[in-house]
Length: 337
Image (cartoon, rainbow, N blue to C red):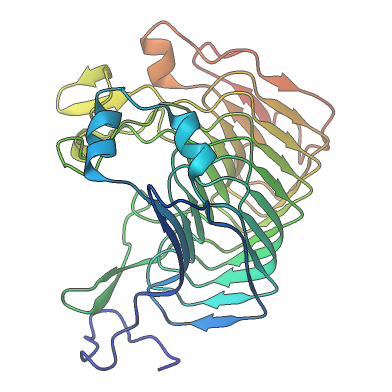
């Protein structure tokens, strides 16, 4: 079954896409660490997920994580590491193209393409470290969702529901280099801290870090709503997310939470035909040597309304030498510096 069904048309049970083409999973407590696994030279078409890398924690560990009794560094030292996907095509995944679960280190996605995923092309979940994403094409991802109960696809109709090519969720020290981002649903690379969504569920526990200390270099962003968004959820109403993090600001029924994505470097990228190329809503960003062309709004847009409202405006944004698309294409607002 190489072609996806149209929106609203149900797959039969026999036709329904299989769950995941490659599941690279280690259970907590295994004596030998899972490492040095390579998936190469594959074409993965029409699965729900192309590849997952997961460290399956026990319910006791998750309970202890909720109470702050477990070292995340210890989990990272035992979770799968040095997993690589190379020279492969992941096409028309119904969910994410590749999903990297919590605490995985040194994942590599290189010389590949992820096209047409319903959700993010690549999801780097909380607590992952030191992934390398290089020479990958991310095209046309983030436009649809899939219900595996009804076996139907649906369009992500609102801009808030559409997804980005790479989601960097509360994880850091990643290198995103020499990739092409084109025509994705909501943008290129979004860095944010999940607000501990659905915190009452037994399998959810807090995110302790932000999307910090990532380097985004030598990429091309074409026809994206936003190329790179630092702290994407800073000004976003998350009332429907059932967040467990401390509430930063409430306005009527709307709820806002502090987003964290600090110390990120955006350098030597090309942004063409985007609405806004770079949005910055957290501190200590370095933005230099980028080239902007045909930008509808701003090349670089710095500031957060919520951060100003709580008396903590975005600070220490270091903008070096860039080739701007036009005059007045860099905006600092809401007290940002």
